[in-house]
Image (cartoon, rainbow, N blue to C red; front, top):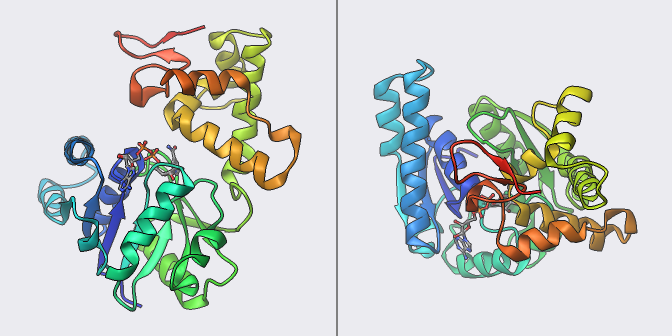
Length: 291
Ligand code: NAD
């Protein structure tokens, strides 16, 4: 199937990145969010990130303007329905995603492929509540979307081959690389990454190290480009906690229990970079550890 229009629901840090790369690859993008403010912020972020790419000579000025012209901010969800491909990228809460799909269903074109950028929620379960489980799958980008090479493609139990192949074609047109994952909690990347981040928070909670020593240890001792706490702040602590809860509930194994300190940060609203404070405080010139 030929994809020309892409609807992105949720214009947060992932949604704006998805709109950015889709528009740059030539797709007509409709970007939606419940919050008009988030939508405005996303458009400004996309412009800034495209300008940065143009400034580095990675794209031309004309290419940048053309990409911006292909993104239509859209506050009415129903106007996203007729897109060829929809990527839901709203907050990582199943009831929110469920409501979005429920609201979209009456407005979809027959051929519309529905996907979710969820980091952990069951694709099969989300798909089963729509009218098209065979045209539903996981389309999981990595953060930051314009930079990261991988896209995990997740088949639900009913996803048909044509849908998978179409999504694979889109990933290739983006110049990215796909890895296919089975539909089990958190798929591949987060199944491995999140327990490591959670263990880093336990290491902090138990006083084995402080924020700086934990991050320094993993950067210099394991050659990770970012420390696990720095990375958690970058991902968003609410998203990290949500993924741990999905692993804990979905695999029923206590080894996935979320660290109480992670819960405490989320309850405080200290969600990492996006709220200005997490394991580091980003409100000054330099990030300062909060513990
Ligand atoms: P975010 O908090 O930055 O953005 C979420 C956006 O969804 C917000 O702008 C919010 O206003 C919007 N939203 C909430 N309810 C909505 C609704 N009913 N309709 C439309 N928009 C709505 O979160 P994010 O980091 O961009 O994560 C979005 C999705 O991407 C999640 O499913 C997350 O698991 C997944 N994801 C995140 C990362 C990451 O590193 N943060 C990586 C891969 C995938």
